[in-house]
Amino acid sequence: MTGLLIGAVFGAVFVVVNAHEPLNGVVATFLRVAACLAAVAVAAMWFSAARGQRTGEGGSGGPMFGRGYLAVVAAEALLLFGGLRVLAAWERPVQANVAWIAVVVGVHFVALAPIWRTWDIAVPGALLTVLGVAGLVMTGTAAIAWVPFVSGVLSGVTLLAGAVTAGWRTLASAASAASAASAARTAA
Image (tube, rainbow, N blue to C red; front, side, top):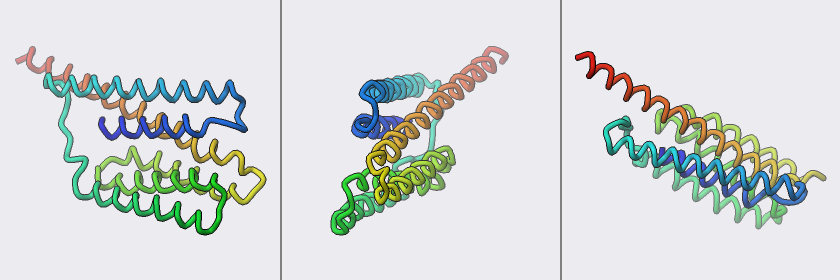
């Protein structure tokens, strides 16, 4: 659940920072509020799962933040900041930055999927990568003003939707397991 919480926070940041012109002001505000509410929902699920683990209701997972994770995050940082410097050196429009960030974050999720042994994050990762590549392509077109929406807002919505969905499934699975354990104890 901690990974989901981190993803939800970054998803909300993607939306809040990038929901602006050429979007209608009302639409931009709606997207920002919805993103913040989705992040709060994931935070509530995180607290619920943490409480369940303290009371023995939740399951235990393997190490999430081990060497594989650290290697992926280190590579992500190098690609992210190195790529932004390359974009600046090539004098690419500033809109290319959010597109590059989406590409790197997407690839990082795809790389983490086998390390964490969960393919749930590969799909949002692939979507973020595609949205980032689309934004990079758009920086060379008349649609450049829409890059923050495509690579930023839609990437944020993807992260939030994935975090909310996975969080809901995790809580439902933990509740089901707790019910089964309780029924087994009662039957014994």
